Image (cartoon, rainbow, N blue to C red; front, side, top):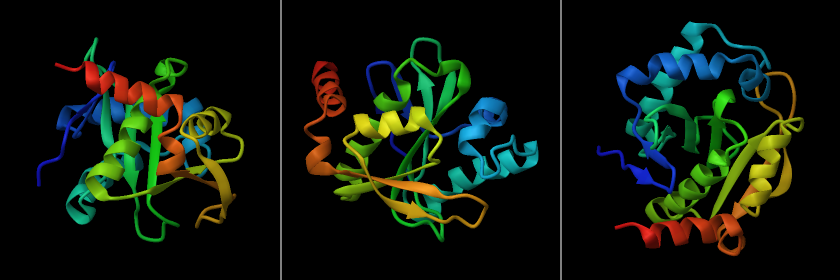
Length: 190
């Protein structure tokens, strides 16, 4: 299977490489990132995060889709992960995002998520994608809103706490500034 690479104005969404492991582990284990993204709200042990990376990589073979590594084009740094996600027991097809703490506030999550929603629609045929967000995760809620998403319910995961289910519908998404910026950027590419 060939995993695509998607380019945005500032980012490259690409397959994970073996030398991404240390950056993935460090970014995922950062306390601020873990507070919003880990099931417990605490940094997971290094071995658990390594298994998560292996799961993300293996999902490409199992499902034909998974999350992409998000690379900052200017520096070549791994800045997060974004893309389709639907492990067993998940409430539906998700496009999720997680940008490492030191890269928050740059608009990378919205830029990468918009590209992922477009890819999920064009390559996989999804007219609706979910976003699973902890209620207290205000930055991710704002990204979801920029994608035109609305809360459609809650999900009780197999760990303590509830998760808000947000949904982005293709027709609504195509009317957002996030979609318009993505299309304009793709038209400027050589």
